[in-house]
Image 1 (cartoon, rainbow, N blue to C red):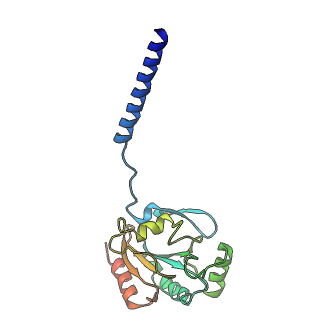
Image 2: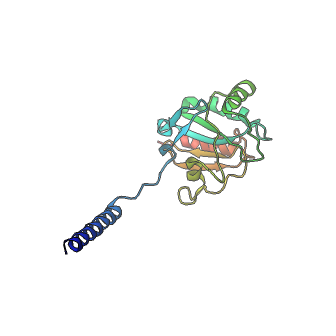
Image 3: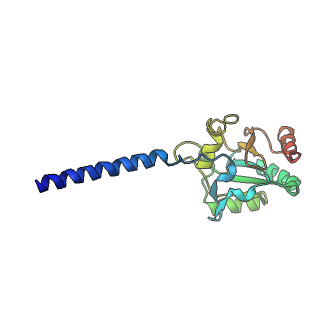
Length: 197
């Protein structure tokens, strides 16, 4: 009888514990989805973690880049607009990616050397990142998902896709690879952001 009572008490305790855990899981707040580009942390080209919140107050252009692409000369245009507008609170975040024709096969160090010697890049260069498909980075999931970015969602089609981001981290424009950095469509959109209070 004592054994039966002990077993019954054990079952009751186990059931109570399970119920408490279930109640706790339903009352615990769900993980909040990032609401801006500034919510992410990424690795820079030298391997250091960078909190994108440090860019709050700046207008950003996020670009997936490659060193062996027909669009690679756009690095020159990117550097040009960076130098033209950086004093207005503008910067470029370049994310090398190898998903399109394997056109970015190099290491982070090789990419950095290529960008600095060939195009004299001085804007922010990050570590290679997966921007489409298996292993897609959380930042690019945010940029391309209909849930987080309904207006500008859609898979990255090729290297040098450009996302324009407002001072508070919201995506306000998307430009496909054929749009050069110095294209008026892009620079006019940039200037509109500089005029926003």
